[in-house]
Image (cartoon, rainbow, N blue to C red; front, side, top):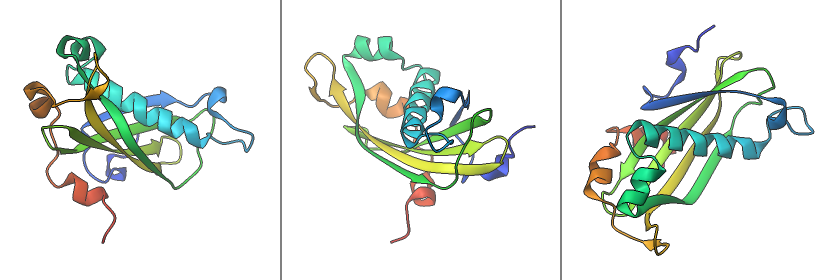
Length: 156
C-alpha cells in the first residue's frame, strides 16, 4: 500500500518515512507525543542533508540553525507496526536570521494526517552559541514554497 498523495496540504518539499516501533509506544498503547517532536527534528535534518547542509557543512560555515519554538497539533493516534510519513516545507526564510518549517505526519495504514507541526529556527554561530546572520547559501539553499505559510497558518 502506498500513501495517497492527496493527503498532503500541498506537495511536500521533502518526506521522511519511518517505521513505528515498540519503543515509540507509551502506556496508552499509541505513539507518545514526544516521539512526534523527534520525527519533526529527524525530518528537518533529513531535508537539510538532502539540500546539501549536513552538520559538516554547518561547521564549515560556523553557522547552524537552532530551534526557538515548536508547535504540534495532534489529530489521530498511531500505533506500532505502521509507517509514518513526515512531510516538511520551508514556509518562511527571512534570509537573515529566521527560518520556519511546517510538518505533516501521516499514517500509512490509516491514510490520514496524524499531526501537523511547526518549528521556528534561528541562525547561530557554532563557535560562540550566539545569533548570527545566515550565510548567503542558506538564504538561497533553504527555498520557501510560495504561499505555503498561508496554507498552514490558522485563519485570523
